[in-house]
Length: 268
Image 1 (tube, rainbow, N blue to C red):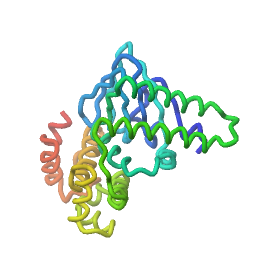
Image 2: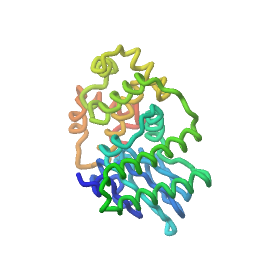
Image 3: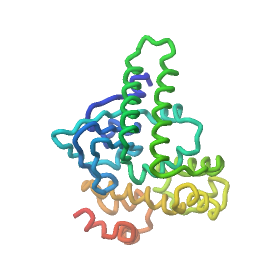
């Protein structure tokens, strides 16, 4: 992948949540106005001075910008983010918190610093004749991420997450990101793969994220199911089969339990 493919800069949210940016993390700095959107089925608003970081673009839909909305968006490929992320365990806490709520409200000083970081990445991306361009871009994105960590830690506080706990949680989330929950939704199965006990995995998850392991398994499952339910070309039986439910009735009970309505009611 070329460096221009690793980092893409846009002046609108067009395409966010589509397959075009499926492998990218989106970092959107609202410069003026406001924009309403749905994130994980909940109404959100991006306003001037807000920074939005979206790791899973498919959680975003119904983007409705106001006429005066101005935004700068930096898309960074997932693999390039991994190369650029600093060696800090704080990234795990930030990742989990932003998964639940992707919008950070910056103060005046943070906003100015974030604006400069965005401009720096854009300027460095334009330096196509730099002999060490890849290293230059990695360093630029890393600085951006370090400032994001700082913004987030001022909002939510800093917790010292042990290296082993961060590593286990990272591997656990990677399995969920890869869709393993479609076949396996038992904490024991994930714990076995991670060579720990189910109790230990849930303790680590609670320590790092504030939630037990089954919370994240169910969250990823429900997010995927709700997205598929919105696709009216898919039958309930088909969706049930995709997740390995023993029967459509069991699938319906699972949806009722986690979404509060039946599949038919959710689809409307």
